[in-house]
Structure formats: structure tokens, C-alpha cells
Amino acid sequence: MFSYIFGREEKDLRFFQVHKFWVVNLSFKIPFNNNKKLEEIFNRVIDDVELQTIWKCSNITAINRSGLTDHGPVHIAIVANSALRLFRLLKEAKIESNLEKDYKLSYEDAEVVVFLGAIMHDLGMSIHRTNHQEYSISIAINILNRILGGIYNDEERIIIRTEVLHAILTHHANYKPLTIEAGCVRVADALDMAQGRARIPFNIGKIDIHSVSALSIDEVYIEKGSERPIVIKIHMNNSAGIFQIDELLKNKLKNSGIEGFIEVLAEVKNEKNIIKTHTLKL
Image 1 (spheres, helix red, strand yellow):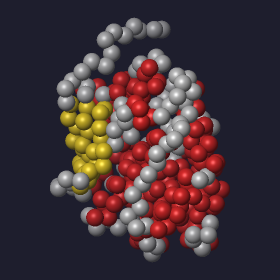
Image 2 (cartoon, rainbow, N blue to C red):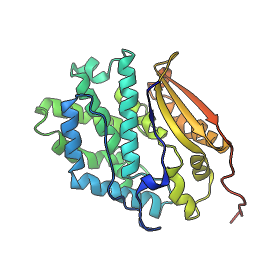
Image 3 (spheres, helix red, strand yellow):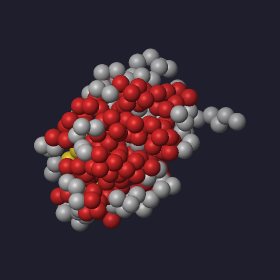
């Protein structure tokens, strides 16, 4: 069965220096599936200095200053691919997108919404973790106007911009997605849970249930399901990974609007120790 695999090897993070979390030579690719608008927008995104820089700034805020997991370019690449994979599996299952249903735009345009929502959902992390989804909206508006300009007429651009902003806002658990597109972005964000995302905070002393549970996840597979359109398979090396599923993924799946289309299967293989001793510091 064909699947996308989202695992993070430490070497794939492409970070250098222990306390300098900048990404270099990021290999960011997505399958275009003959969607010419998506390809053109992707090329504009890759060449956009503002976006590239904000992603770097988001990682400075997240890792250096807050001791959180990766929220930079590697996270963005994984979420974008995951969101498109989820969205395309729903398309295979004859689930109509809201852009098609509500605005009579094309499925290809809906893919553009999913992609842009995925790559811009964490822009506000460059300012602060608290309320970052709202800061992301403020930052994204001008960038979206620039990225979409010349590809869409004014009315189409405004519609797509609005739908992207909705996906950005509702990726946060406090907001309920009202579109299939936004639901895919929200769930995809939670699927970046493999161990590399927490490797750097863990190595510099951020030892808590968030980092330990993330280090327990080896790979995440997104596959076509049999009973439901999508099955998400999670391979763990330690039972602590259950925290990622029950506390983080579950919260993103709940009220996502696409939870009824997804089955989640988790399995522990070759249980190993992540920490040998831990001293409680008060």
C-alpha cells in the first residue's frame, strides 16, 4: 500500500552549532500532481525572502528562547506534505472541499489553500508563542497578496486569502475549523510528532513529557484506509509516545471536521529506554 512516511532523522534537521538553530540547504518538495497553480505558488514561496526569514525567526523563538520543539522550515515542510496527503485522500474518497462547494472554485484552488495554510500557520511564532495563531494572520495578509497576485483575479485572491487565514487561525485547538481544508492543516500540524522534532531541546536539557514522548515516535505513516478514507499509523519505540497521541493528536483531531474520516493506529516496536535517570529540580 502506498503511504507517505514522516519520520525525522537527526541529520535531516540540518541544524548547525548547538545553540544556533538556523536551517540551511532545506530540501522542501511537494508533489504537484499536475496542479500548475500550486507549482507556481510553491516556486514563489521558495524564492520569498520574507517567508524564509520568518520561518527562521520562528525557530529562534520556539527553540532558543522558549525551549519548545521545532517550528521552523523543517516543520513547515512536513506539515505541508502531510496536509496535502490528507486532503488528496479525502478527494479520493469523494469528499468535496469547501472551496468547491461554497465558492464554485476548483479542487486545484483548494489545494492552494491547504498548502498556504500549512506553510503560514506558525508565522506568528516569530513574535511569541502565546496567541501566535492570531499574529500569524496579521503577518500572512500582505504575503498572501504578493504570492497570489497575478495568478488569481481580485475576487478569487480575496476568497483564497480568506480561506487561508481561516486555516491559520483554526490550526490552534481553541478554534474549530469550518472547512475541510482547514481541518487538514490542523491535523497535519499534529502529525509532525516524530523524534527529531524534540531532539535539540532534549539534548540541551529540556527533559519533560513533551520531549520524551516526541522522542518515542519513530515514524508516522499516512495511508489510504479501508474502513475510513485515511489511516494514520504511528510507530513508537517507547510507550511514552502515547502522550503525543492522547494529549496532542487527539486534541487536534477533535472538532477538526475531518475526525470522522480518520483512523489512528499506534504500535510500540522494540521498546527502549530514553532516559536512564532523572533528577527533579525545583
